[in-house]
Image (cartoon, rainbow, N blue to C red):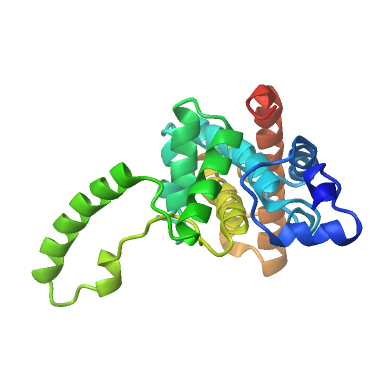
Length: 240
């Protein structure tokens, strides 16, 4: 544990990737940032070699960069792009949208991630860390219950009350997964608006073979990834 606190996940300290911690080592955040620079969509190494809270801090920074790139192409609000992408493909958009909104309001990726993980860990311990927020949720729940009683086909789960948007059993890894999915969602929306997202040398898109469609997707992801790298680098002070 002492080694993992210092950012060294060698040997037995590697077991720390299975744990959620309230803090994030700057060394581990930097390691995750380098992995995301190689592939902004995320890699397996991000889950196996980096502390999940630190990885989520870096992923929040890269999600914000992806959202900015996408918003520039779509003309939308960066904080809402993942929610809009949900119309293209079903996505767990709640947490990425929350993270983007907090960053847009001036919070750092570190503060956002550690705050969410800490909140979820307190909930897992049976504590209620945000009574004021719960009151607001209860007010919204009352409206939902009113609608539910008038709708015979309503799903009871739709009226459930979540004390945290994360899985309290594995909050940091759950957050990391959602943030990477958010980056994927940004790419989906970006392809809908990017005028350069065409490959004329592949011929008419309606006549593409499976191999040509896969090649177009690869090129599209590569173009988007480079735009995100440039934006992440330009806003690096947000991470460090």
